Length: 143
Image 1 (cartoon, rainbow, N blue to C red):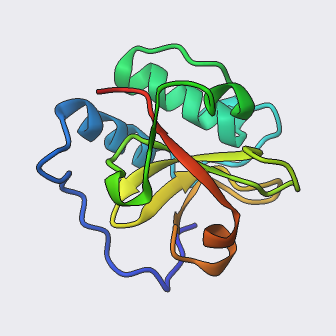
Image 2 (cartoon, one colour):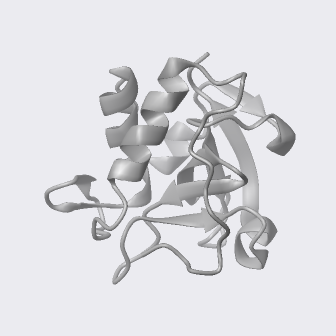
C-alpha cells in the first residue's frame, strides 16, 4: 500500500539515469503490493527486504547479489544522498544494528522496500522522520 500522504511520483529517470536504472525502476514498481515474508525471495511467495533487492537486481540487471542485507551493504560504491539515482540501494538501522534493512531508490527522495510482517512492498519517503533517523548509507552497484 502506497501512503496517500506522498506527492505524485515522477517516473521519468533523471538525465544521469541509464536504461538500466529505468529497468530497475520498472521492476521495483512491479513488486508493489506483494506481501512481506521473512526469508522471502519470490513474487509468488513474498519478499523480505534483501530478497526483494536480490530479485529486482536479477530481473533488471541479470546480476546475482546475495539475499542478505549485510552482504549487500558491502557491494558496489558508496554514494551520498544528493547523488542517489534510481536503482541505488539505501540502507537503514531498523533492528538496532547497522545495515539491518534495505530498499531500492526510485527517485524523488523515495524508495521501494518490503517493510515487515503483516505489510506489503511499498514506497516510502527518505524524508520521513522514521527513515531519515535510521539512514545508514547508500550504495551503487551498477554504473
